[in-house]
Image 1 (cartoon, rainbow, N blue to C red):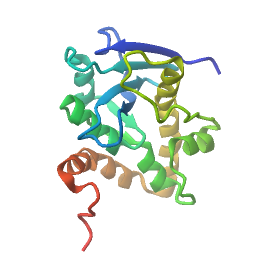
Image 2 (cartoon, one colour; image 1 turned 45 degrees about the vertical axis):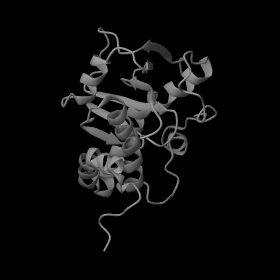
Image 3 (cartoon, rainbow, N blue to C red; image 1 turned 60 degrees about the horizontal axis):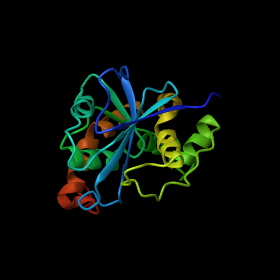
Length: 206
């Protein structure tokens, strides 16, 4: 397997970058509280071995091209644990990301024989890949990102297309494709509920 290509951009995507009909996306923030912890980095890949990392610059120019992509109804956005990323992108950029696909939800619907649905475990089982999580707790707000940070961030999006393909086949085999589709459609609303203060409440409970 050839080494991935990592391209770091400050403030926005370049004008000449395209991702086709589906783009894998991940975010890095200063922490796990979207009201407190700012959006620092957005990673994107077309699943072609190249990752584009966009540093969100505080007080910098508006990332117009990135925001347009996130809202493009013709482009599917693939995440792992989309609920968090959609909330972070809304809080940081003020846009509702759609349409979306979440490999974590797909995994929970398809891989009912396990409770291990993290990206590292998922990549190991369905692709035979070892993903490092060494930089997971890291200062993503730093002006200069280390090579190790960039490599970690890139690997979170480089393989999502391939993982999606494997999970789609499992969902179809088990007759749960429609369940997944409806769950994905609800995700932007779920993220809005989280931001509105309902993150820890099961609104469907009695």
